[in-house]
Image (cartoon, rainbow, N blue to C red; front, side, top):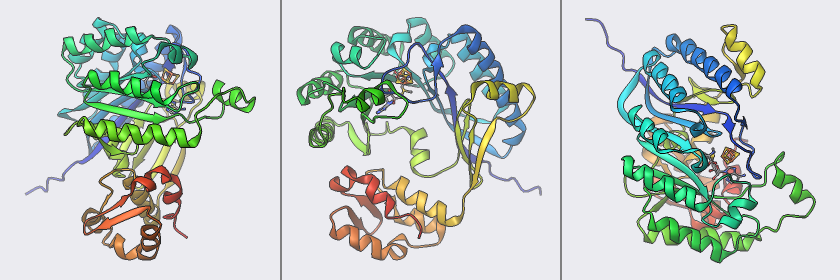
Length: 385
Ligand SMILES: C[S@@+](CC[C@H](N)C(=O)[O-])C[C@H]1O[C@@H](n2cnc3c(N)ncnc32)[C@H](O)[C@@H]1O
Ligand code: SF4
């Protein structure tokens, strides 16, 4: 009898690199919304999907995530075309988590209804703050009213899994501003909240202002206070922290992002998208013209490739897993690598336990609260020598 091989399961990410306007803090790859660029881009993306249809025969998609940039900047027709092509060309499990990122300043009732029709079942909305003064000062294109209107419309049309993105440590944001944002967001009962500490990224408007000493940022202690307040307040409300910056009601953790943190395989399509398949991390070009030209010539737009050694994989599984509050699962680690992490990292773990950065029990290795505060330093400890 012919042996039936099980298909490997992967996450699929699609990047939409357009925004109506660049926010002052953001260095994500995105360009100003423009019909002509979008037409060219969608055509190229369809070709990229086509090129993968024969290459992905051994894989089945288990989560779908359309991110950006601002996917909701696209018309529903364009989204429909992309999603149709995905379903025609790739093997996609039915009923999977399908997320779309949106900016409230680009949403309409028609788009929201359209998303449901094409199978989107998880909506992520970027709010950042519930304070109009702050929204304006960070370059957002929407007010809190516009956000609220779209949030309620999303609920009315039938979305029952909504994430809200928030940011703290913003210029001119006090602890009481942040508490107010959290309180208003909790009243809306979203299933998921991502709360990010502002990072000043090179090449952004905020970076220039920072260099000129013109940004009034919270100091480290205030920022930590905002973070700890977030964890305690959301946990009490049943929106429980499951990753350094992510909180969810029970069973609403983002399955797609869990693929990254569990160091599992995923494919990213679109400008600058990253992938991890077959022990190889690779990334598409972030040059718009190059992306379009390569695909017009029937070539994949991959610009960097890095084969991962077993040591790399072990290290990445450790530091990605430590981002999760559940930590690294010792049994899963043993099964995957045939190595006991409690033994191979014994010396390092003992040191970090003494410093109060890590706790260990029979089946997990986790960061402590203090460890989460200084997580980047802890991750460095696991780099192979
Ligand atoms: C792709 S955007 C979300 C969707 C949509 N573009 C929007 O902004 O509403 C991803 C999220 O990353 C976060 N983010 C972007 N740049 C950041 C930075 N420099 N520091 C912290 N968080 C950042 C924001 O919360 C933002 O909502
Ligand atoms: S935060 Fe969102 S809307 Fe703002 S520039 Fe970045 S991707 Fe675009």
